[in-house]
Amino acid sequence: MKKQRVRITFSKTEAMRFTGHLDLILTWERTFRRAALPLSYSEGFNPRPIMNLAVPLPLGFISSAEIGDFWLSDEFTPDQIRNSLDKSLPPGLIVHDVQVIPQLHGGKLPSLVERSDYMITLPDNYPGLQEKIDLLLQSSQCIRTRKRKEYDLRPLIHDIMLVPPEDGSPPSLKVSLLILPSGTGRPDEVLSALEILPHETIICRTAIILKTGEEK
Image (cartoon, rainbow, N blue to C red):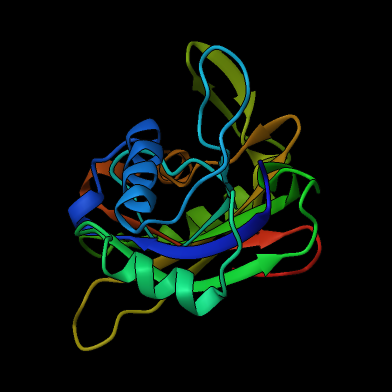
């Protein structure tokens, strides 16, 4: 039985960088069990814990701003939930905030997401990078291939900003990508469009912006 809906903001750090989306869901299920926080389960022959993660984080990415909705079969205060989780979290997961969501049966979290923001650490300086960014932002389309199908990346790009280097370190990129019914922008594909090898960078999601204007 659903009695409480809680929204958790958390980091997925280097220790879980190569933990995939499905394994992350299983990790959360085990964490709630260790914390003695009873999740609500679906009905039917194969009951599953009821939870939604806002946007799947691709393998190899890290994040300081993930969001998940979890339904509990009992009621707790946010402090009780956070304290119990903090004692049970595996390395690589850090809880930043716990909120009780009044809308027990409201819209699913993935349908509320408008865009995701990323900070990308580059391995080196790239001559002419700003010009390539300007050209991409000014273009009317950017055809890429995903899973053997062509699609237009350009409508999914909200903004790209080159962050100047400090203390001799290489520059970074701030990339903001829209999440639309027609598709979801991926920062690694933006890097490829800029002729940067994604596997040589560190990609961190820094914000998930909801359609209500709430930012996490």
